[in-house]
Amino acid sequence: METIYVKLLDEGTSVWRPVSALKDSAGAYTIADSEKVPADEVWEFTPGQRVACQYQTFLGGETKLVACKKA
Image (cartoon, rainbow, N blue to C red; front, side, top):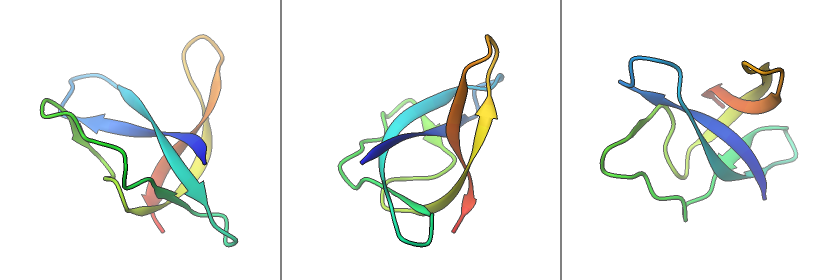
């Protein structure tokens, strides 16, 4: 398992949730089914979805792996 970041929708600003995901041989990630979406959050991608990821540099210079589209 690795940590990737999923964008939260309807927040008014960019907010990202760290989640556990499993990388497959094709380079895509499947968000762990064990992840729970809090009742007050809307995730761009949900537990069990297979996603493509890319690195993104955040404010402050940190680079993190973010989910960018369904795989």
